[in-house]
Amino acid sequence: QVQLVESGGGLVQAGGSLRLSCAASGSLFSLNATGWYRQAPGKQRELVATITRGGMRNYVDSVKGRFIISRDNSKNTVYLQMNRLKPEDTAVYYCNARGYSGTDYWGKGTLVTVSS
Image (cartoon, rainbow, N blue to C red):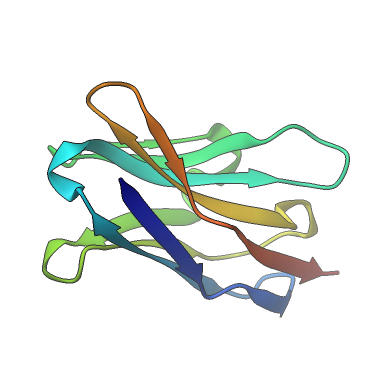
């Protein structure tokens, strides 16, 4: 089992920045990739960014050049640095971890609100 706890959400003005953190605990050796998804009101959950165990990064087109995913293995923590935020980035952001078996683990989410 893997437990994920997000932090760092909040209210920010358009153009501002936030950094989300996801602290992982449990059977971390079983994980292949970790990342961030988001779900805006009335919309489906969508992938934002992922980073594999080997360090490969993937971003949804709408955040490329603005968001950076990184991790600190010594702290078992994954970060999402969000810059030049837009109102359309408003959503609940969820940390995700995927095991080699395909099992998905989810955090409870953290709300990001970007005001115009």
